[in-house]
Length: 351
Ligand code: NAI
Ligand code: MG
Image (cartoon, rainbow, N blue to C red; front, side, top):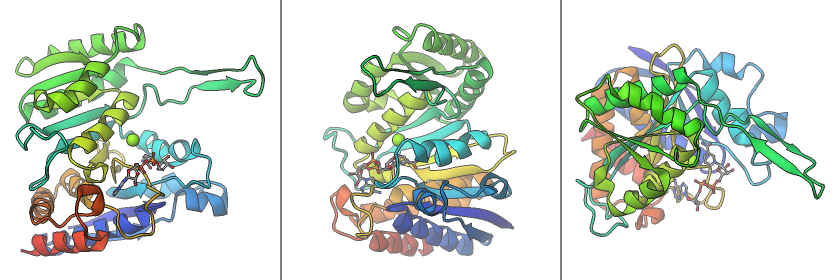
């Protein structure tokens, strides 16, 4: 079998960690006997500075034909930071109906969580973030921003089909895990959108009597991520709340640089896109010190999605073997470089 993979480094540390992700994928492909045909696209904020947009006019048409997209992150200090999400990340997520943002939070072998009393059995859950609507539909305006009477709006959008499909995904995932879904919301104050979200999710929950269903407000959930992470199995939440919670998830794993994600189109009628949860980290770009693990792990999630489950599991195992050996970048308390960590993962993968 041969898979066509689009590779988008993006900006900043993307140029350092995405190539490492590709190397690990190629090593896995060789070991497990399949081919990866990769094509690079230089899209992002750097591309914008040269061409006036984050991707070519044919960008979406071109990307559509791949089995998967491996992506770093976009954004540069020199570029208006309202643009990367709008013109790249969210554009791809919505055009390709990647309505699931799948973000595992799992303590790796040998890593001490900053939550000192918590161990691997306590920190093992998945954040399922609704990825196509909600607070991030960018439906609003700024009026008279330079005047004393300026005002601004952003109206979030929640649709019944949009809520139902993400809910079904979360409950089905829970059936394969510890059978528990926690809906994280703020419906006591967002009494229209999030109360409707809760209502539709509670209706979907009825179809999954084997899954324990509960609701938690976002303020309490942030506290519980820190104090009682063992409460969670599948955390189902909205686009913005999930964005925030997943960085906290990365933090309790010991570094934002560990967090992987998949922007998933479950129906597979368009390609899915796999990226670490963090951004382009311009503050450390070009130094060779970025943690490549979130990126490499995202590649494993891609292999799982396209059906190469054994190779995906082998990569995750090799990541854990590497962290257990204490081969870590500075953000995770180690002193190894990006390349050293990636090379160690490849060695462990080859076995
Ligand atoms: P960020 O996630 O890039 O960085 C936050 C902090 O975490 C920084 O101190 C950074 O050095 C550190 N960090 C992040 N990833 C790391 C890694 N792999 N290894 C070691 N340290 C790491 O978030 P920030 O600074 O808020 O945003 C920077 C740029 O990234 C902005 O332009 C933002 O818009 C963009 N961004 C893009 C995303 C995407 O393309 N999906 C997602 C989030 C932010
Ligand atoms: Mg984020």
